[in-house]
Length: 330
Ligand SMILES: O=c1ccn([C@@H]2O[C@H](COP(=O)(O)OP(=O)(O)O[C@H]3O[C@H](CO)[C@@H](O)[C@H](O)[C@H]3O)[C@@H](O)[C@H]2O)c(=O)[nH]1
Ligand SMILES: O=C(O)[C@H](O)COP(=O)(O)O
Image 1: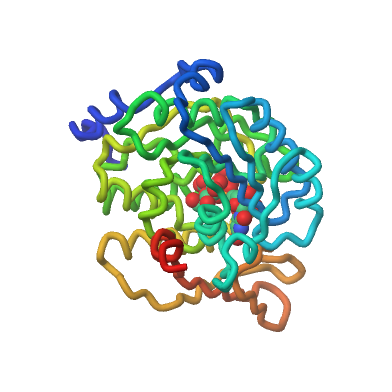
Image 2 (image 1 turned 120 degrees about the vertical axis):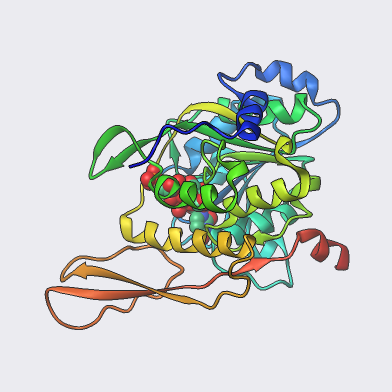
């Protein structure tokens, strides 16, 4: 292991200027600072019936700071939509958000379409699988946007417990962040290495920025937004706030392998290394009788036989052009 180097000067300066810990604003102060601006909070949700209502209630507790709460139904087959609506959110389906544009799978697609389904000048994204969450998520993320005109994108950061098989470790979450995203940023976008949680699903931005950025289709969406924002607007357009502790549904390693592959493809694209990537067959291994990953979006083709067998999951990079191009042409 190597170590002991200094933080880059640009990163050290940015971290000092653009990191807020702890969050210094109250909801009431920020409500005053809105001055006519409106706020939409978007919860992307794919089968989150166990948690979505709790997240909606947490956002509602931010009071009049928030003008609309939209749960984007990413194709749920459970009771997410009913529970979100009962908790007070507007629920919008993918096709409804952008009629005439065929929906594609993936989280980035859900977020991209949410821009067509909402109107706020400021847009806050909060994952729908969070547990033990409160209004400070929204308050914290809006603070820099409402008080620092130069800031355009605000990422949340937190301590991340890891909860597997009903056992909770105090930290250890953010496995893809530590093993894939951070090493990739160090190599291809080191000016972003001061971002504590580059993959975090809790962030806010000015609509004017989001509508002008392309959106990666799957789980590459967050790292792409970071890389595209810094290229377009510079490091000081990004801020980050300490949101305390974040607990969510921790996926299994096989699913995270797919997520990591999607992130790799997006970073290589943005870095100009692999701008026209072909779909990749990610080969993972499962023991007979177990399931290697369970999420939708990738093809799973277990081979016959006992013992260990390969499971092939195809990872294709997809993405959308800036939504302003769609909205202005329709
Ligand atoms: O096709 C999808 C996939 C996910 N989601 C929703 O998006 C949120 C986050 O998805 P999840 O699968 O729980 O992601 P994580 O394992 O938590 O991954 C982390 O890292 C990802 C890559 O940066 C981010 O997209 C996530 O927000 C971030 O929490 C949840 O509300 C999902 O229901 C969709 O709506 N559609
Ligand atoms: O952000 C990440 O690194 C991935 O979502 C994985 O998170 P987890 O290790 O907390 O499940």
